Amino acid sequence: MDKTDIAGFNPSGHFDQLSSKYDDLIGLMTGDIARYTLQTLIETPSSDMTIHDNACGTGLVTEYLQHVSSKTGTYPKMIHATDFVPSVTKLMQNKATQQGWKKVDISVMDSQDLTFADGSFDLSITNFGIFFLPDPQKGADQIYRTLKVGGTAVVTAWKERRMMDTVAVAQKTIRPDLESLQSPWAELWSKEETLRNVLVNAGFKAENVRIVEKRTDSVVEPFLRDPEMVARSYPAAVEGWSDEEKGKLGQEMLRIARERDPEGGGAGGLYSVAYIAVVKK
Image 1 (cartoon, rainbow, N blue to C red):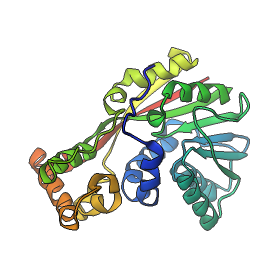
Image 2 (cartoon, rainbow, N blue to C red):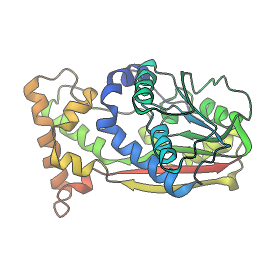
Image 3 (spheres, helix red, strand yellow):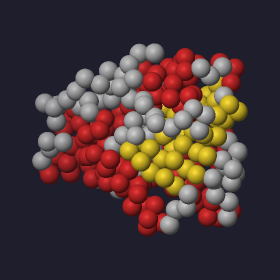
Image 4 (cartoon, helix red, strand yellow):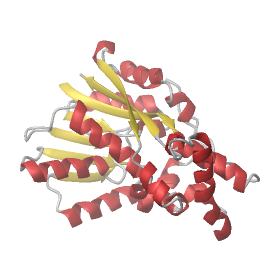
């Protein structure tokens, strides 16, 4: 498995900058895929299950699990939520306190070097986190190691990110002198075989790896209603820009999106498509 080429890209710094605004834009998309997965592709967690929310970010997976449990009255035995960026775990801890989460432990931990014992989890969920690791294979190895025999792992990645592609084109139009937003992992992980291979190489049997695709339009309506949300909620997109230039980003994105999809009002230039791997050990 190739390591992610992160020359010039600092995941920790990226999420430090993004953490307080993550749920307002990127989290709309990642959260939508997480909810679909938990509702549709796996069984509802039971009271005897121990769960790992791996590379948990601001805690959207755990937040949804807590929402379901509050409705059913059945909570997992424990949810362990971990991320290597302290700022996002702090934000998640604030959510846990404010919302009164139950049976949740939140800690700072590197997904490439988990401290949990072998076979700790009945369910391990890594929602759009594995490709940010300097060595995704180490991350997959740890998922396999810490999952119980008979347990289920969920790992997600992006096939397409049209919203981010539209951001990059708009950046070039407004500030052609600056390097446009890039994700060093995007091309490699847009291939299904990348996700499949990292799981098989970790030890999962190929026949037990199921990958489905799911489109999310969750950001389309909010963006069409408020194009300025990108400049406001994704600081990396407008780093070094003047206020006047920041004010142009949303409208330029809207123009590009509508040009690409005139019949759909721009929706075709804003959706994303995820790979969702559900695998048994």
